[in-house]
Length: 142
Image (cartoon, rainbow, N blue to C red):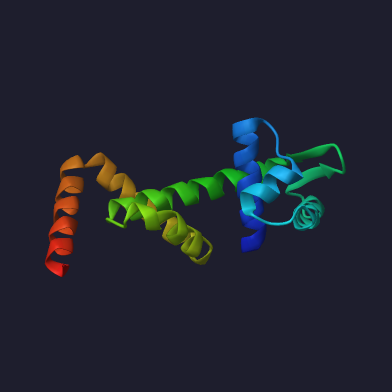
C-alpha cells in the first residue's frame, strides 16, 4: 500500500497524464511544489514498487496498478470536495480541507461518504432541505 506521500505523487501523475498525455519530472515538481530532485527520488521508488515505469530522460508511464490507484485517488479527492460542498463548507476552504483529511480516512469511510453524496444527488428535494438547514444554522450562528 502506498504511503500518503506516494499517493500524492501517483494522483498528480495520473492527473497530468489524463490532461496532457504525459507527466514530466518538472511538471510533477511544479504541481506538487517540490524540487525536481525530490520528484526523481520518488519516481524511482514508485518504479521500484511497481506503480510506474521510469526511464531517465525518457519519461514515465503508470503501470496498470498505478493507473488503478491513481484513478481511485482522484475519485477520493473529487468525492471529498463534493461532500464538503454538500455540507456547506466555504468554497475557499474546500481544497485545503480535502488535502488535510484525504489520507486519514479509511476506504470504508470514503465509500460511505460516496453513498451519502449519491443519496443526495438522487434526491434533489433532500439536498434542498439540507442546504436550507445549513443556511439556517449559519444565520443562527452569526
